[in-house]
Image (cartoon, rainbow, N blue to C red):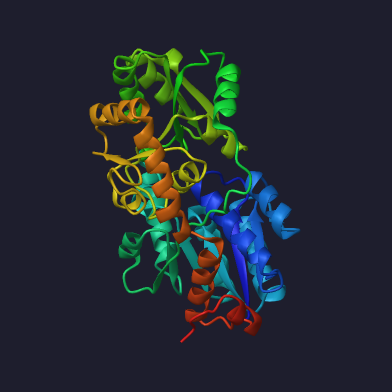
Length: 385
């Protein structure tokens, strides 16, 4: 095999989308367009972003069956010598079905725990989880964002790929960003802003952050608000949680936000209360890169980035009481917050470069039988032994 064909959902948002976009940027930086090609399942923000950095990206529209038929034809005629690389459960199904028809090989990146991808729907959890795992277990190998995910595909080669974040080239004045966000939300300019950047999904457990808010408000002498940024199907449920906790007017759901740097820069603290994450959650990386102290649940993926008390604070997953105490601690101890940010930037961020991500992908491809161009072997010092 002499080419890679990457298939992704064009309307993807969140950490997986940021990961795929970082991969495309790194590949474009090394001018890998002839070697690595991207195909989008439908249009949307991710399709637009990848076209902006990588050039024209073909779109597969229509029903699932139509996409499978189209992709099968492309595998046979347009990209006959390619390894097919799917991202996400929907792409896994389409790519697996097409590769089976065309007798091609495929791989996939497992961005999140397959057993927790559909927690918001019991029916989807029963059906789609099994279908997704069925497809993953028929890959030639997988890439995993968390080494523990490999347990779901035992016997299949698994290659760890960390997320990547670009160095921050231009800083945003945090005070100005804070004032602007408060003004846009029509709240007091002196407010404490607690940020959560995550999709509205049960696995992110945003309800715990909401439950912590009234406890924070009781301990600080300034107005406190929770600002949630991210799309999802759990909006109505989380609004009810806020109402039940008596803080509905103090919780703002912004939906998908494009300018994340200005958003993060406005926060006093960033919280990620998830039940499950990959080993390098983008929200934690982004917040730290933009100068915001992180608080995260004590799950393995977040613990890979946060050393409690040094590069952030950890709380027992689901424990709103401890989370509220830590938010108050960072707000009332600005020196501690500043030290945490500086240690995060110096100790954590250097491990997550775009070059490291691209190198991990190319080495995995080579192990699956793809012939890597000599120019890329030299440029990234690949270990293909």
